[in-house]
Amino acid sequence: MGRGKIVIRRIDNSTNRQVTFSKRRGGLLKKAKELSILCDAEVGLVVFSSTGRLHEFSSTNMKAVIDRYTKAKEEQAGVNATSEIKVCIHSS
Image (cartoon, rainbow, N blue to C red; front, side):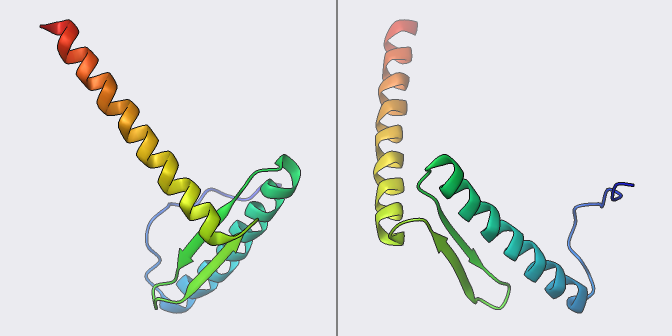
């Protein structure tokens, strides 16, 4: 028999919320590690708890993953800006 669906909303009870955070954080870290191994993907995961504590996983160097992410976002922004310019020119 399967598990029932839960409503995704903030858990009011702080103890239950902390237990759920710990369990789900562990599952998320495990999935990130599995994804990096099974698919040869470069994975970086950063999670801050409500108390500000840092939890992280990186399949390589975290700084390298963040640098790659930043570079990809900059390139994507450049492509989007170029596309918007082309649309404006063509629609005139």
